[in-house]
Length: 516
Ligand code: KIV
Ligand code: ZN
Image 1 (cartoon, rainbow, N blue to C red):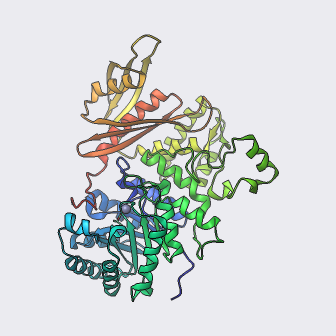
Image 2 (spheres, rainbow, N blue to C red; image 1 turned 45 degrees about the horizontal axis):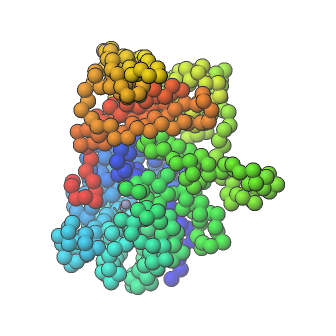
């Protein structure tokens, strides 16, 4: 059997990535990320789980309407209503795929599904045949394949390929596998399933033991030709295999792989920053490829080596993954055109003059406070502009905080609630705590603060602080973001953004917990 030399990159940031607590995205945010993924030439974009809620359905449909050059995929359990719903959501897609799944491990069949192996095979085949009424591009996943029995996997896979599945995805759902065994499992399936040549074998690895990328690459060496991954490794629990790591490993070690990816890797940084900005999941500085230190040479020896010959310490070129960091791009005298052009280069298009004007006036305010504006500042600024797509019920009007050594800080905040200004004040254990309490004295949101984090967007004490606030309430968990050169103001903006978002995200069901 001949195996293709193209490695299909299947991005599931908008589906599995969104299953991370707090990473919920609105429809417009999903469309923005999908556009960036399409620009990077990702082969398949899994846009969501349409049956989860009307909002999820609309998001998948909107991505299907927008994206033309990548295949758009929707997830469906192996049940009729999911498949019919996914089929409808994907109808506008230039190229659509239904991804249906059912668990095959003994523990999942017994405890979660309460079904016998025979019933599982029957339902899997029925689901694939139903999906074939909507599209001939059908992916099937035996969920928890990494803990399933090989003989049973062979049986299910053969049956679903006969029923019309064109991609067979092998998930290590709980991140339990080790690279040599996982690769060998995929190799064995490709060898033993009689009709394996009629499907592309794929892998979907979770990172519970920090092995998602290693397991995925091992499977590629054994013949897998699709890898499912996410930007920045976002995803359930410890996340999924990180797209940028998989892609750059295959690209950089072409001496070891019999396949290559078709991606424009120079778009990686743009996608990474976009996803981080929208979800509020910061990227750790030492993260491979996209972390702030990934191409920084701190030690004198390394710097000397790199100056003599880059290859002494660098295995990739920073510009090949889109790093143009620390480039001063704009300043306070830059005009509207320069602003718009630089953002277009960063993959940001404005939908209306009003949106551009709004972003440009925020830029002018920032440029007055901060003389050098970097790409990172621009990206944070547009994230804020677009996040006001969610109905801005609460808006920060002003904030005054007193903080003095030995004294309890207090804050006075004025916010506009649907146009009506209200003032609140409170003391707190620190200035941020006081500001949040002052907001709550007005809003009384009955939410729980689950996470508070501050990152500096660029270097220097005049850098903007980017704050993420995670709130839980009414069965939803959301992240809010805010950026400002004053981190207490950034914090208040992030808190209000989270409050605005909590009403905008659907109260969605989880595809794998059977709670739809
Ligand atoms: O982790 C998993 O098993 C999944 C499936 C739905 C493919 O996300
Ligand atoms: Zn998963």
